[in-house]
View 1: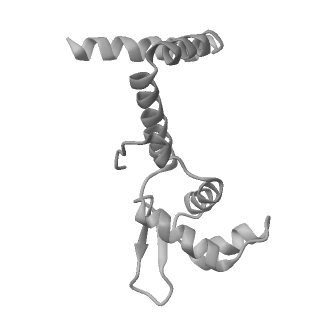
View 2: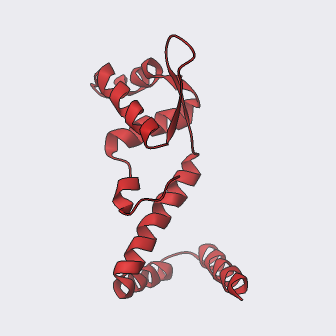
Length: 133
């Protein structure tokens, strides 16, 4: 996923998130497939889904196959890779611009996690420190 100067650009809007959720679930789909899924739970125009999927392809999140009559789309990144990239972009941006409050907030959040997660965080810090040497 491409890094951008403004981390909020990497975050998905509510409709984009819904379209990606359906795309991740289906794996490969046409605009009609995604529209049918979304229309089950909300009133949404086919053209709105089409435009959103084209934008997501432009952002590099969906790949478009134009070989057939109906364009087929598939996720270009996994949900996990997207989440990791988005969180990393936002945290890096916050730590660069607001280091003290961001670090204090993260430290407070660590106090609220369970022992297993805390052990995983400690192991990650240990690996990072070892890699820097």
